[in-house]
Image: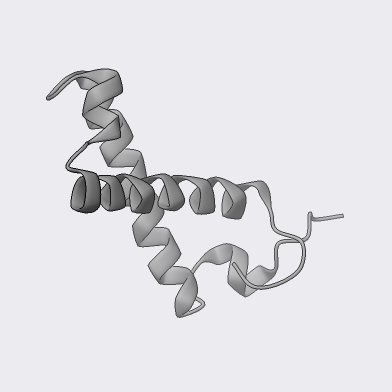
Length: 79
């Protein structure tokens, strides 16, 4: 997730990690959990969202250390 064009995977990771960060900000400052507010507490849908955000967060951390496959091979589509 470096500068320049990003592949669709990098964009999805960025969006999901951003959603997770915003949700934690809402929980911290406003005591509101957007995910459980929209999808319910402990529902399958909320668990899927939390799981996707967790995977995105892990991938974002890996990209810091250039361990993401997209970072090693570049985000440009193969020709």
